[in-house]
Image (tube, rainbow, N blue to C red; front, side):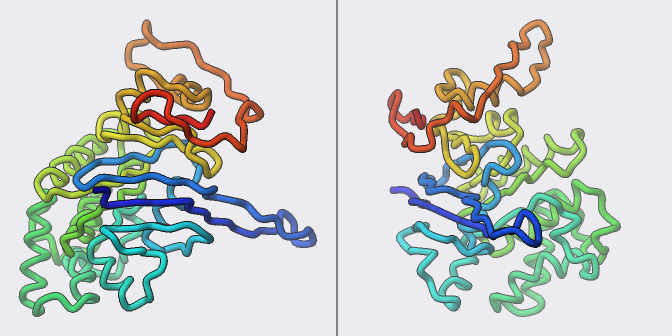
Length: 292
């Protein structure tokens, strides 16, 4: 049984291109559907502006969806009143893209990790401090550094603090939104391996949002490829990377650099006009879907 069932998710935004012009409605997420099994690592991949982050934020109701449903372990998250939604958020936590923006510079690292425990009224003050130090150890930080401020840590260490904060409430689903894109290349592999180790150790279900194709291929069991708010291809990561079906997926993969320069394939040109906006996902091979 799927832990996550997203069906027909839509999110629209209204904007004015110029102050005097008429409002224009943009469908940032355009009726997407997918499921994630318990314990699975599922990836949303696509260019910037494809709707990946908006999808993740809608699922946590950090942005309210315009339409659709999100069933999490049998509960309709979009239909929950604020009191029940707050309780459910203990089970769904998010790691944000930029640790500099997501960590309060005025709070000490230990207090940041404890913050969710305080909000949800978990444990006594002493128990929360102990839990925070336990989380520091879990993500590879020295618990003696809990009294430091975020600016006293490196970028990779700040992201570890963000991960520790997300895990303090013992969530079932962890949503990681571009968790390494703001970090130095030398640090990215450490954070990726940490997430993989934690997923296995804590039996987490992981939704990974990323534009880095190498990261998605290395980490995820299944992948959905997004473009302009729609899922154009979805299936097992190995199948999509070895046998991409949709023209956009082929163009996206051709743009990824290959360390072996002699094996570097030719760049495939993609014309957005080639996309049929009415095409629905259909099964091209067992478990492999494309909007053709």
